Amino acid sequence: AQKVTQAQTEISVVEKEDVTLDCVYETRDTTYYLFWYKQPPSGELVFLIRRNSFDEQNEISGRYSWNFQKSTSSFNFTITASQVVDSAVYFCALRHTGGGNKLTFGTGTQLKVEL
Amino acid sequence: GAVVSQHPSWVICKSGTSVKIECRSLDFQATTMFWYRQFPKQSLMLMATSNEGSKATYEQGVEKDKFLINHASLTLSTLTVTSAHPEDSSFYICSARDPGRGQSYEQYFGPGTRLTVT
Image (cartoon, rainbow over all chains, first blue to last red; front, top):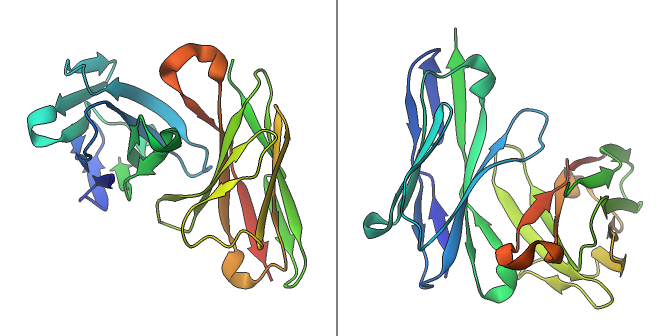
């Protein structure tokens, strides 16, 4: 069974602080994909990153960075120098290659960035 | 590219009535579409997988007679909530897969439809 755990329900930071959102996953598949999505108050999901299970290289995109650790089944997301516009709910998701390529979402982390 | 639209963006209906939500892939043909449901402050839960020209596959616990899904063309899937009740009030999100993008099996999400049943 696939499972994604985002233990942090809500995080509040002050603008310009760095913040890391945790994601731990469970799967029996050897090939799978991990995702992060941002959901602002408007509700529309914004795709942030996709990582396949064979690529453990960390990635940086502007103020965003991702740390994929297969050994601990974690795919953490760090926002550097957070801004108020980063306030949103962030979802981590897992897609396994079988079973119709369904996405399993974590419960989400509400990030609040205050001035 | 890979834009998915939903209509309406929000709808209010009376208890006992039916409401139809449309999901369209605007610039690609989607052989597979997915319907999700999201309650306030909760995660997205997959309701069903819709394949063009065939019956939808529902997740466990989802009433297929209540949530009718039709995927009649490669660019349109519809979700009809029949005999809606207040507990059906939720945010419904669709996604579509673009087979033309190789093996990535990427899902592209629509903006969601907020349903309120009074």
